[in-house]
Image 1 (cartoon, helix red, strand yellow):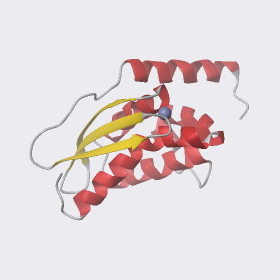
Image 2: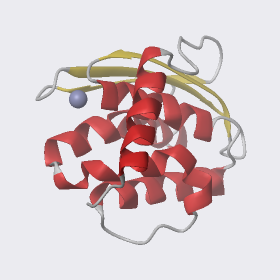
Image 3: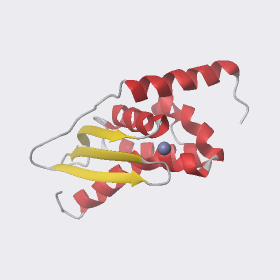
Image 4: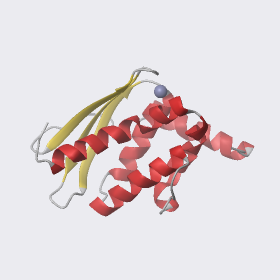
Length: 153
Ligand code: ZN
């Protein structure tokens, strides 16, 4: 990837900002809150995601805690910003688009909606880093499967 210097600076600023000051940091409690733990042993990243899915499949609330590399934590933080309040369709598009950005496979449907997350496309070349970037996202996928099967964590 040929990143301009400006874009590289922006990437570093955004990743550092989100990893140092994570958004939606913390836990959720109460009825209908799903909790999923994810880890990425090759890098030592850990993520706990709490998500509350509404009756229409919308994300009513989402929070996370975790530790690990800056990419894993920044990706989780940016993810929660984009997912909070998203309806089911938007959530699906976000997840598909983010996967397309970090793997380089498939088409991105709505680049504007991804916003800062598109900066993570640099991980494409590094399979280990793809695992860092997608850790929190895989946790949400797991939570959605739980909510669809009616199981509450
Ligand atoms: Zn990592």
